[in-house]
Image (cartoon, rainbow, N blue to C red; front, side):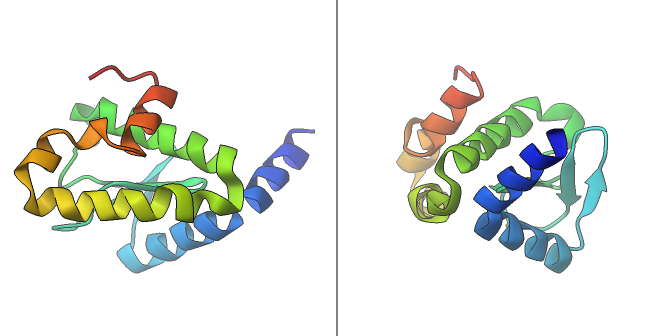
Length: 129
């Protein structure tokens, strides 16, 4: 039954999960079995959740000192499971746009987690900032 559930989740989150695995290949990310995340080092790419794939930039956020980042990306994973094929439009596009804007606007950067969809990911992950 668990295998069937995993297959259904994979089909439901297919577009973003496929994109996640493409990013794993492009970034040459390594799988961290302990945390169930893919790790990479890059100068400007933020951590991201694409379906069943969570990618953490360990140059920006070392795993042992960034537990909120892991929880937050887990919140995005829940969003993906709720929204299925709509995730990239409803969450992905606003999230990447917000991330880019926050790099150039100090006010947005300071309040990053107060904006949709980041605040929803925090709520799903039970993070209080």
